[in-house]
Amino acid sequence: MKNINIFTYEFWEAIIKKLHWNEKINGSICSTKGRISRFPFFIYSIILIAFKLLLTHFIIDEAYSNQQHIEIGLSIPLIGSIYIDFMLTIKRLHDLNLSGWFVLAPIFFTVLTKNDDISMLGEILLIIWFFMLFFVTGSKKKNKYNIKMKNKPR
Image (spheres, one colour):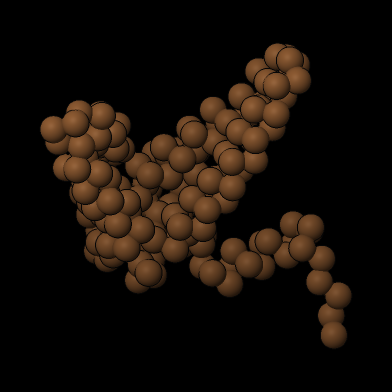
């Protein structure tokens, strides 16, 4: 049996080739250009959520120990992960043939949840939003963002 080391570049490069992510993610993850299909978007989202929870834990822990310089230092990667999250969501919206400006929709829906009269509407819209991002199939053909997915989106 071959010795597998998950900490090598070659291991992760083989995984990416096996999953065809180079064909399913057009462009860099830090750019709004291109598209991303459901499965890589889901995996990146899980990784980013875990990263944000871990950083938030350390920020809160350091805030209680009054080490503000560490708290500020940990906030910078947290802001970077939020930026990447926005870029990936915009790419996912492009895969659904929607404008990247729809990335601001959850902010509007969250504001709706704060209003007692229509809070249920905001919650329903948030659920529909996340359902759409994770479960609706993207366009298979060239869309208005002028990029065709090489493989069938999952």
